[in-house]
Length: 168
Image (cartoon, rainbow, N blue to C red; front, side, top):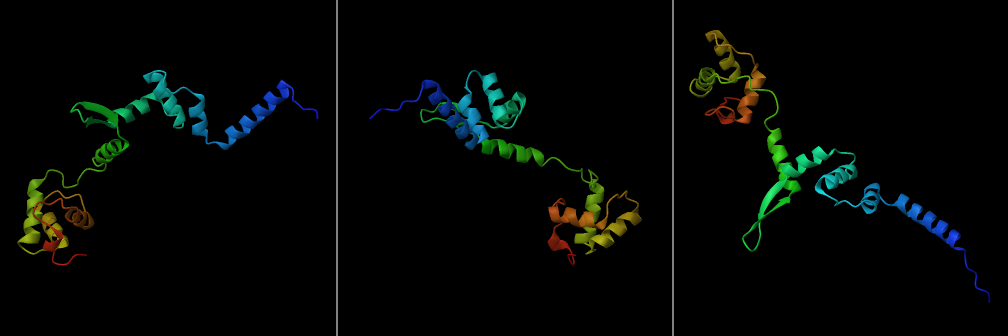
């Protein structure tokens, strides 16, 4: 029996083809992570992480890391700083609560008190209370629906949905 051996060149080519097929079947991010040394330095690591995450800039990664830094207590009562994705998301969600339009009531406390008194003490509906407000000469730039929304959201100190005669 004669042993068939492939020349080295053919073997290397077939190996190259096999690895190319294998690379195509693996996800893009995993393939990039295998091919690159991620931890060369902080700046280089952030750039590489940015590339892995779809071309994000180094500064985006820095902001994300800064937003998610938390102090954790070790068992020997020393502290360590780590990144927490949950903490970053919670901070981002909290910061997003301040977005949106300003209240149409503003800081007009006399108007707020007048509306509360008309609805709670005099048993006016929000529609009638708003009409009375306009009669008295207060500057009002919102409609009845907005007033109902403010009551629903709890923006009045004393006034709740329970104080309304009939909720529409």
